[in-house]
Length: 213
Ligand code: Z5A
Image 1: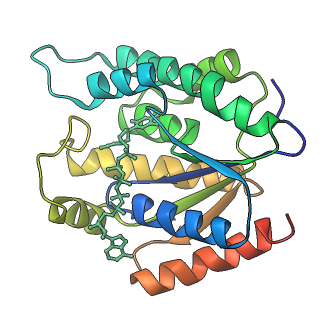
Image 2: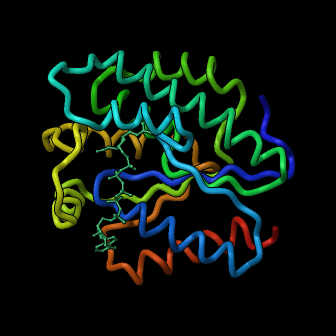
């Protein structure tokens, strides 16, 4: 399952309140203005069935999900998204813009839940074969700032957002560890800065990595 040569797999990652949705909108406008063909998807979700799994994963239920159930459901949703969106998009030579992917699993289930990398890696190989992002934009923000922003959006926090601060500190550390391990894949952006500065950093990365397409 290798990436199609002409497609480009771009993923966006970050902790709570990092500004992913805002960044995804900015990236889409930039790609549109540069006449780049892209499709957009998200995880968990992106297909009808995967969106059902998302509701189960993020909703509040009487019955707690075990950490392993959560991990397996993330990969079940991912498998649907890969089959219906990611591979067809790459095979058509498009940029596939995916709001979160497997690095989120390393961060939240591996780091946050403490499952560590081994089960994540095993499922990554099983579900994805050799498919990996060509580039990952990691919006890095300290969890205190991020949670304050997320709470500022209003509405009830979802099942994972309700975790305690030390969970989000482990998530952040796991993301930064991934970025250190895979410097060619990751572009780390300081998302604690005001929006114009974040967008300036994004612009630099997009021009450097996608400007020649
Ligand atoms: N999850 C997982 O555990 N394992 C996995 O494998 C995967 C996912 C794939 C849903 O993700 C959950 O799934 C998530 C991880 C877990 N956990 N939780 N909880 P999601 O990506 O759908 O949900 P999200 O994390 O809430 O992302 P989001 O909706 O994109 O939120 P955001 O990053 O906070 O972005 P935002 O809405 O653009 O920004 C938040 C607020 O801050 C908003 O009011 C903005 O106007 C404001 N903002 C944005 N940028 C700035 C700057 N620079 N300064 C000041 N204010 C700003």
